[in-house]
Amino acid sequence: MMIKDFLCHKRVLFAGGLVTGVIGRKVLTSKPVRNFAVQSVASTMKLQKDAAYQLELMKEEAEDLVEEQRECEDK
Image 1: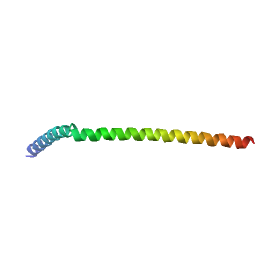
Image 2: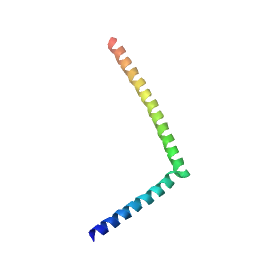
Image 3: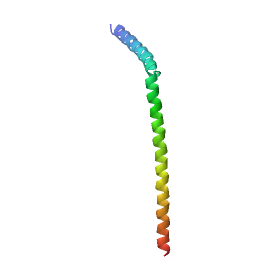
């Protein structure tokens, strides 16, 4: 009895996995999901560029502060 229940349970899980895979593939290849993914990647790339620009500005300001400190120490 337990073996039959176990095998039936395995079959249900296997069938559920197949259905999930088929539906998942359809969803992932749909136009709205693709557009959302492309927009997400584009936004992330923009954020990365903005962060790199801000980091460069901070480096330049830090270098200016160090230079000012050196000039004050030399006087």
